[in-house]
Length: 462
Ligand code: F6P
Image (cartoon, rainbow, N blue to C red; front, side, top):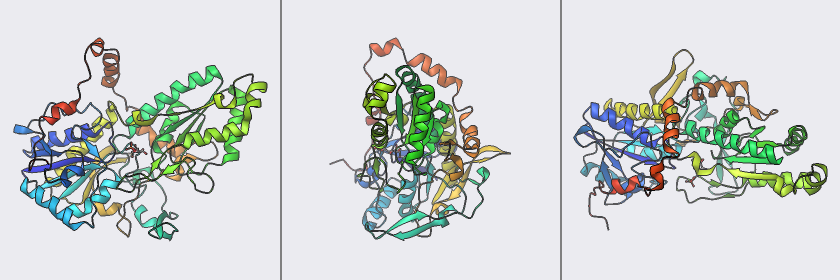
């Protein structure tokens, strides 16, 4: 192979540049040219196919900085419908004209779902990324556990994960962790720690909402910030038990910190917050309002009298407050763990293309004896019997339902990821950058301005 393409699809993560950088470094060593397609699949869908040559003369362009969050080649949730043969064929034609012999898609489960039609036209490898940590399998046969059950909503059925007959082992996980997850947890933990001291001072109940869609991995990771209660989407919230626990804690310490994943559900499996259909073509829903729903619930339970008369504090609405960690989880400098493993995955994806792999995924594996290593996995290994790739949920054994916090297995899962996740360079970067006096004088210079000058087109854009 002389020339390959790379694109970053779906929501961004802090480690995307690191993955692209890892791929380019490996391509330089093997004398392969790398073209980066702008804004994920949306570049390929236009006839102008905007792209950037990421390694002219086999050295990476200076804008590609693995320590910077986001992605210099841009990301989008644009998706190619596999049924739309005309579009897929046109894209394949464009790639051929550009003499692209293989494609690396950096993405999550949605991207992997969209990869199949391309894999029938040129070799394609996925390098995983997602802060949600939901691209992977808890064990190899997990895709076989998915069932189709009737539904009132179109198309008349939905997918549901059935009971497992596999004994869980951490060593048996496929793609132990995805780049972006560690940084998202790092940011969320800091949010929880900072909220705690103010909740303590003002005798308040704080509800911190973290991202992750229907997966509770980020919420679980916030255990490092020592919230009192963690609620994950995989386990329906038992409202009476929750209220009782909050009351006990408030009596004891006069403040409570609760973390909830944005996708938490009630006993009937209904999302606690409002759930509105997003425009995301990959079919992902937008979740918002979980923390507000919990707040309303607690405010109604305690009422103003409890805080005003009994606790000599504010009204219930003032005493119970919510904060979303939000998109700060997805941005900024990636921590060492993410940088290192993202780069490894990028390099592995290049190697896999050169080895002739197609419709395959570069993965991060971990075995207790061996530690972390990168490997390749067949894309179909993630697909259920209908060809669908489902997000990985938090394995039930990771969460202690009674204590509403990580179980021992959950702790054992997290320790190898987070123990040395932050490197010395990360600490030094904070020291040097936060109060850099130069920032007071210089306007922000966006990397997009520089990348724009490098963009080339197959045909003139309209
Ligand atoms: O999948 C990543 C993620 O950050 C989710 O955790 C979150 O629900 C969603 O994307 C938000 O998407 P966006 O910022 O693109 O609207």
